[in-house]
Length: 630
Image (cartoon, rainbow, N blue to C red; front, side, top):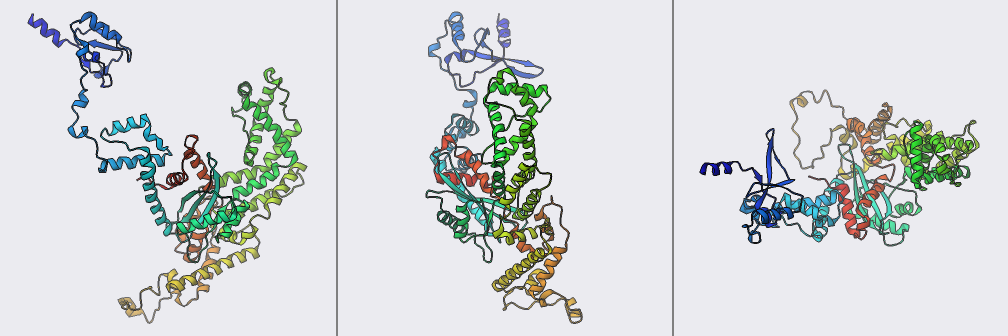
């Protein structure tokens, strides 16, 4: 008998204890069966096993009725009411240290709190994320002892702390820049609050372009040039952007108030965003009566297919039947001319499928929708073709990582050449070309000389093939004059001549009281007979002229090459010209860097966070764009 009891004990199945979350006292009498398949331990959560009789009972998550019925029927001696669910093995065996709360002032707690702040800022999370049940659960699992601070703690202490730390790093980076260029643009939040964003750009000593979003500040007054000028002056003062002997170039859109604001703030030259300039010229073309009429007809067709799920389904079936790419029709946006170009281009691609779909009975009854005539289709094709160079340029400058102002005049010349009249042009094409040419020809006339110098300092375009010989000579002469002026001012400030700074010889810049440098044996032997020919005796003008002439004679680099990398490799050969290039090549061709903040702002100032204070908007955008996660 004893042997039989022993055998029954050893034959009991292995059971997995229920998780601690299952708190019913019934669970003291049941466990989940464990089986081994090919050496792998598997727990069956669809059944439970009675610890008293080893009976298997089906189990549905959260339902313990059948378990309770089993105990009452087969084990009436068990008093369930007095049974208490024991603490899980994991909890009872936790070290004592892990049962104690983590002190808020401990390094570990501070590190976790700071990491949560970085998560909020870097991933554009709302402050309320720290109150979400899922986030709290994750933190509890990662560190059970940690007490998550409240939302105000992050908005009032952690994020401002990260902001000040990042601002200090950005200020330090800007302080090493010899010249700084700005871009600025305005936008309106979901809460209908107006903001103006300012970004700064400079070339580092390693010849890489560094960009920073400096600030996003609200504008409560009217958007007059005077108010905007005060904001710009405040930015320059707060971030200490002024440098002796250099100007702060500002790239903006072509709105009259911001153009005047740059001048009133004492900054400049003001460079019109080339993407915005192309947009304005193109809108002149799309606003012509014939072009607008074709766009309107295509727009009605596209809107119909976007509104009607039946029509969209029929169009998709026609695309498949005709082996046409399954692309959706594009709806244009009035303020973006390139969207009108894309709408026409996509319609022409899908024309056969659209025509076939519109002849279906389910759609044909809609009398407001008609297909384009052959003349309309021909006109649409001509419009797409004539606007193609502008579309290519817009895509280039919008996707280019660092579109420099050196590209503006070469691109403008390219556009004007593509818009020259031709005998083969139809009347509509001639009108389109004339509208674009007339709008674009006088652009940048007030800063043309400045932009010519930008182009000359770019090793891709320095041959200046888009200007005549006289203009080319004048541009390089102005470069020489500016470098000489810059060097003379530098000499006055430091007492170091251009010759010594470019050759590394001559004056050492040491104080007069310094002891004389001891001569080497080679100098003692041959110093009198073989004098070192350094440029000390040459006047600054001659040195600069020789260097600029040599730079001008060097072959241009391929158009898809990196001009900054070229300067990095050739700075030692053209040190005086390189100083100027570091200033001019940092100037953006567009205000896209500021405009890109709008999409970030849209992720921060969402519908559920429209009441976010302007100060928090500024700090969160600044951190999202500038903070480096260590």
